[in-house]
Length: 180
Image (cartoon, rainbow, N blue to C red; front, side, top):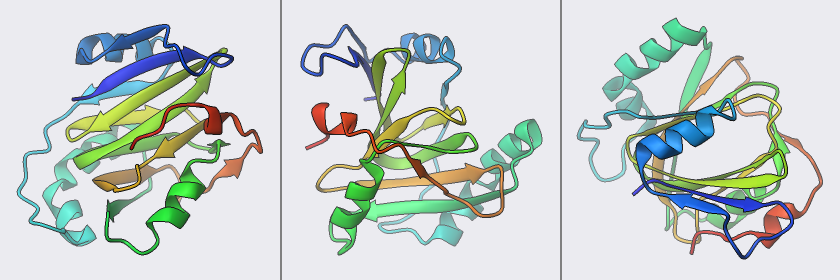
């Protein structure tokens, strides 16, 4: 179940707000210019789908976003617990960073935790299958896929280069709860 937990950026142990209600989550995030919507991830992708299979299954959703925002490229990120690079990738994504463009993700299976550092608060969004999130360009954030990751998400970009991170060097991510 999708969830939003908000902490102050000076107190990592006691949340100031929490909800699993999709509409409440959407309202809280939209107030911070973060897009959060529940879409339909209803295609059968098989056990460990190839990127081409995912793109073909959800081209209609990609086309909707491209028409709406003019995005230029997209790809698929899929991670499983048996991936030999999972620890390296988890460590990379757990470092606070920004992007020069919106970070758009449509989760078509599994889950991951986006953590946004906004206005003195940490917004932890547990995104699961059916969740679309768009983190505005320049927003400090990190992503946790957990120690036994299982997710597939379509990533949509404003540029042809794809995922480009600008790491902040801040270690704040180390203080906040992570996925098991």
